[in-house]
Image (cartoon, rainbow, N blue to C red):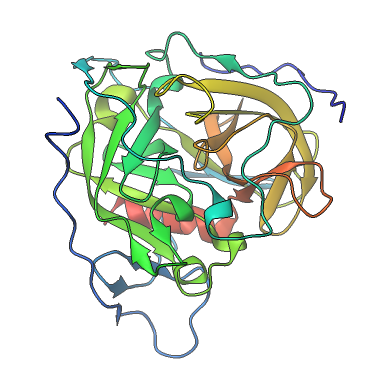
Length: 320
C-alpha cells in the first residue's frame, strides 16, 4: 500500500540478569466503587482495588472543543546508567491477546527514523518498559506515573498482571540517561481486565521514585469532535530495531471513532503504549495511546483515544 504522509509536525523539541524489581503483590479485586453494574472505564489496580475516578482536577484548561492539562519539560538533570546484558523480555503486542488483531504494522515503506538524541523533550519523557509479560513503550504523565497500553501490564488471556516492571525514560540503546524506576503498582480498567476489550486497552504504572521531575511529562488532551487531519507523532521502542532504541514517525489522524483513532504512522511490536501526540495550544499533549495494528481489511494502525473517561482515569492515577 502506498501512503501519503510526512506532513509537518512541530514538536517541542546493573545487570538485569542479577537485579530485577521484586514481584508486586497481586490481589483479588475488592470493590470500593459504587455498587451495581460497573462502567468498563472503572479503574482497577494490581493490588485488587476497584475504585472511582475523580471528576475534577487542578490545571485543567477548557477550550471550545474539549479540554487539556499541560505537560512539563522537566529539569533535564541526568543520572546516567549503563545497562548491561541484552534483551530481557519479548516485545508485547495486542496480538498476544486478540487472535484477529495484527501486531503494530509498518504500512508500505518504513518511514520511521531513529531518535538519536533522546535527552531532548519530549523524547526523554518516552520510556522503554521491560516486564515479565513483555517489552513495551510508555510515557510520563507525572513525576512518578507512566501511561501505557493495558496489554503491556495486564494479560487477559492468563488473567494476570505483570509482577514487575522496570521503566527507562529516554533510553538510548545500552544507556539510560535518567536511570530507571521500578513499578510499585499497575492500573487499568475493568473493560480491559474483565473483558479484554481493545476499546479499553489502556493503563498506567506507578513508580518508586519521581523520575519525571528530570524527564518532564506529557500533557493530556480531550477533543470532543473529529480529530481527522490532526498532525500527530508516535515515538517508541520497536522490537524490530536495535534493542532499546527509540524510533518515531509522523502522520495525521485518518479516522476518528468513539474509542479509537486510526493513522498511517509506521510502528512495530514493542511500540504498544507509545504516545500519539502533537504540539498545539496545550504544548506537547497526547491525544491517544498506541495499541493495535492493521487488521480486518482496515489499512491503518490504531490507538485508544483519550476521551473524557480516559482523561479522568489518567489524572486520577497520577494522584494514587
